[in-house]
Image (cartoon, rainbow, N blue to C red; front, side, top):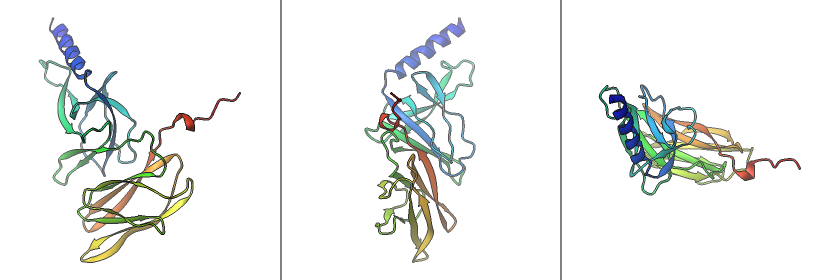
Length: 229
């Protein structure tokens, strides 16, 4: 009888959540997100475990949301009313239908989540995403003759790169150090036709790093080779 009541309660809870709209969720860890606890999203198929990597963004999970995105944890109490319980509620950007959920560990050891209004659906190879996690304003130039993109501390910006598929582009990053503008990054990046780039600026001590993450594009019907006739 107790198991039956638990099952009925779980079904009623899930039904209530499933009256809410779906949204696209992808995840990405900034740096080394230590001791990330097990978390789940509620989807049409049930509860799906989230994964966080600092090497690439996850695949899309279509999850139920409201004004916030609930992150679930498996209930450990034997008398819990549901097999899953809400662990966190992540406040979402207004009117968003797709987010990249960032996760990182603070110097104090606390885990943080931050949703970015971003969609990989329909994005092109030149639709880059830049995230400045540092305490300094950063200027980043992509291309020899382009104006630098200015990112204030904690800024997130989309930038359409002016470069051809399969070719490369010079990049230069600058910031203020001890009252002087100095170059902290300079190299040549290849533009791949099947992925865009996510650029994350991180700060360790007095040094700033630019981390480039390849973000695989979602194939559309136009990208799929036509069947042989």
